[in-house]
Length: 441
Image (spheres, rainbow, N blue to C red):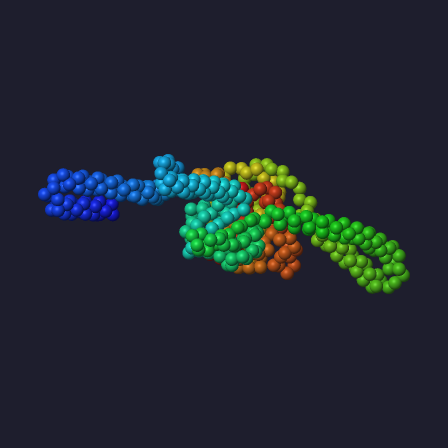
């Protein structure tokens, strides 16, 4: 039973009792009894009207609460000419207008934020309260190399990528450069509050190209300066050595014994040969900075690899290293600079041979994505020890080499050639052991 019904029932009962009392008291005086009953009737009607007017504001509040619950912030009330009601209506209308403006502002901000995340070149990843991936913008999905819906709901370290593992190791407020498959990223972790609880998010920016340009500019300047100075000195000293050898031969060892003449001549020849090797050593570095732009012509990649394997066949046989195609799709000719790509593949296969040592295997795959982008992918995998953590961090870094006599040029040159061809490439450890190079044409 509602409060209004209770009050009306109370008024009816009270007036009924008063009517009975009036009847008992005034039944001998009919006129007065009639007047009393009329007063009671007017009183009860007036009381019911008062109750009704009292409950109108409550009805207004109830209706307003229902509209707010339904998130209807467009409906307002009109004034009715009663001071108390009008003041209540004015307060409600101001509140509704404020809520409508606030909701509009929040919707516009959310729409702007969604558009910003969609168009941002920086990758943004948010985590839920359990630390699982909740939101991945397109840039982050591209950097991760996996669709957003495939990453959603998983812990970063469960995604099976070096980037995910590196992100999981970051503490809130940390920022560091992460290397993954020859690419380098700047990753930062921060937090924000949602529904009163802290949630983490990551911002990931790729620095590969920026660092490559910076490094290339630095070693370009260094190599040109060294080449200039060394070649000038080597040329002059080499000329003097040749003249000295000729002079010793013409003058009979400068009147010295025959044995001494032979030793002097031999020493001069050794010095000349050493200068020649020094010239070749410096020229190897200069090749990287003098690398011409690729001259693209259609090339059958599978045939190119077969020819390189024939070239390296004796060395592979001597080391008892098996090589085989595990998959070979019919890939159309690809526009590329054959000489430069051949140099890349020779360097990579030689590295694989040296990493294996003896009694191993090199597997090759050439696939064509016929259902998607039509991209051809070449994969070369060896069964060697794989990349060390240090090598993984510094892949394609100029002058870095894990070999005792290495100059750190092979992978640098390969990276430079593939980058100039706009061929996406990754060098990484294979889950089953060994290293593999993946080139997407």
